[in-house]
Structure formats: C-alpha cells, structure tokens
Image 1 (cartoon, helix red, strand yellow):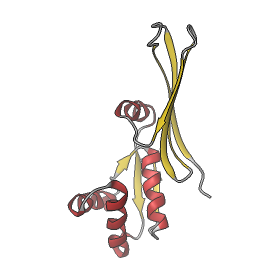
Image 2 (cartoon, helix red, strand yellow):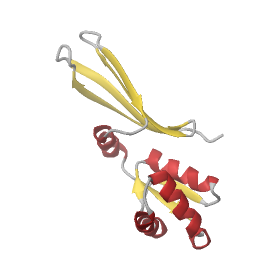
Image 3 (cartoon, helix red, strand yellow):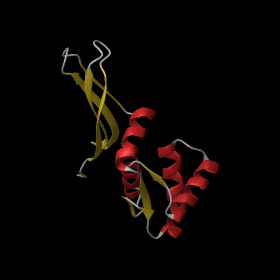
Image 4 (cartoon, one colour):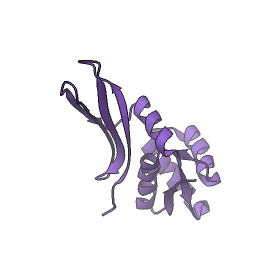
Length: 139
C-alpha cells in the first residue's frame, strides 16, 4: 500500500463570528487512493470551530499551499514506448480531450509538467498502475 502524500499550511484569518484571530490549518493530499483536501479552524476568543473537506481543491487553498511548498514536476522514464498509455491516462485523469492531452504529453515528455505535489503524485500513481514508470519530484 502506498503512503499518503500530504502538504499542509497554517494561516490566520478573521473569525466570522467575533472578528478575532482564527487559527486555520489546510491540508491537501493523496489519501486512500484519492485526492482530498480539508481545512479546520478554531477561534481562541469565542470558540467557533469549523471543518470543511472535499475533492476539488479551492483556488485560495491551492494558492496558499503553493506559496508555502512550491511546485512538483512529473518525470517519466522510457516514454517513447508508452505514448498511447500516457495519452489514455492523461485524458482520463485530467478530464481533457485528445488535443489538450497532446499538449500535456509534450510537457510531460519535456519534464516540465508541474503542479502541487499531491496532484502530481496522484497522476504518477495512475501512470504507474498503467505500467508507466513515473515519479513526482521537486524541481
């Protein structure tokens, strides 16, 4: 079983109930075979607590995580014999058509396809399950 790959960020926001400092923790990761996120917060002044989670990462949490952790790159070894498999996985996992997949395939083969580490690791795992030697790494 593959280990979870997780990135997290801590930040302060104003409490919607009392305006005091709200401590927040955001997490994004590959957990149990799926890409997930969650945000938890608690106000030390009024006790307001909240937890949200889901599959589609919000832009504001993505931006915060990227600012703290940066990008990861997808590396594929021996890609020439696996182009059809790469295209199938890219289309299926990214929800894109053949034209877009060809553009992404060019980025993958050039070693410049990037995203958040959990996103890239999730795609690398899907590629490995399809028989493609793929790995997510920091540049």
